[in-house]
Image: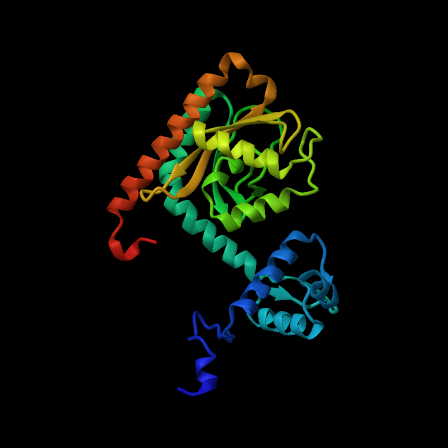
Length: 281
């Protein structure tokens, strides 16, 4: 095989992606994509280079390579933004995840909402953040930050925070760093010491309760869902107006959420057991 051929990956669905070896280059490309994801407006290549702390020519090479795969868009030069291909990738992943999880999680969440009167959610960790996969809304008109596809922090809000004690050390450090300088829904600023104290309590209790962290006036209760191997897989939670999460009913809400998380874990274990070996992740 020639050196040129070794740098190319096989065609997939008509696409030819040039393969450039090197974990540092891959890390920079991922950082570039995530940086663009956090921006509401397009940025220049010079701004990308400064944000990623790389030479301008390196940023240009990254942008050109990602542009070939449709992952960045340069139609409004000199500005760069996320490419439209992410819409296709997002829909494909949504179909996959929904097809795998909804048959198990949807009935559990519907029963949880019916029993508690609160919005029920299934979130999964994605890097050092969490993403809402399934939501069953309550009749309350209260506006929440939780909709399917919404990316949320792991350092705040019960739904994300309840997974944080079981992520890798690297992701934990990243999530704690992300909290620096942030302001919670009640005006407080999260601290590394406070987050680590919360994680110790979550691990001991097996659930998390938060008030006014992501949204002012909103409380949440969450419990973790684990894989058969004991790894964190998701969280099941309820969220709603803080006045509904008073001491008189909080214990019952916690028990309902913990039970729903355990039921979800058992349902997933059964689904994975019946999945053919070659089709399992």
